[in-house]
Image (cartoon, rainbow, N blue to C red; front, top):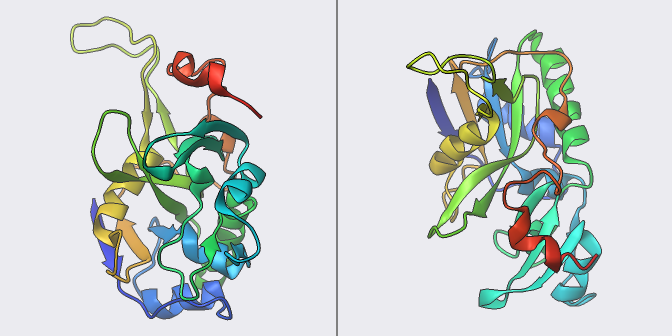
Amino acid sequence: MKIEAIKTNVFSKDMNLVEFILKHTKNKLKEKSVLFVTSKIVSMAEGRTCNKSKIDKQTLIKKECEHYLGEIAYGCHLTIQQGLLLPSAGIDESNSLKGEYILYPKDPFSSAETITHTIKKQLSLKNFGLVLTDSRTLPLRQGVVGVALAYSGFKAIKNLIGQQDLFGRPLKMTRINKVDALAASAVLLMGEGAEQCPLAIADEVPLEFTDKTDPSELKISIEEDLYNPLYRDRILT
């Protein structure tokens, strides 16, 4: 597998996102390529920003998130947003030219599908994948890693349940989350600061490409989540 981060001009809200992508990827996209796009420029393209003078951050977080779990360390607020356990509903204050809050896209999977369809049509591609990326922290770990906010064009989960392990025992619970593993690899190269690489391209990726993306394959309900006991009693909304 090969992943290349793409250095670009700074994206601004008046730009066309697909034109921006195609301008900077040039002839790099081909059959079975996977394109990674930081969710922040998708949000900007969709006007999902908020002037800091119009609302305080805590109010905005509660307005944006699916579930609010309360204030935690470092001035952050623990939330569930787009099926992810995240600080501050994914709202970002960095890398905004005018110092605005950058929110998540309203419907990330719909955004991913639209971008994928347009690029496939313009480049006459049959098999092509796209991942909208962000960053998250992990419990009991320092630092952030990349995560897939949404994806399109391929199956995200490889189900190994029923297959045998090394010693012939059937696997009972194992599923491989390919899309988050890919997002973590891509974001490692795209960077978190001033790298100016909001795009990355992966080739020779072991994926099953598809015309129809099923977002439900990736998500698990709060009731079934392994970590449910840690936060279930804190869900306030």
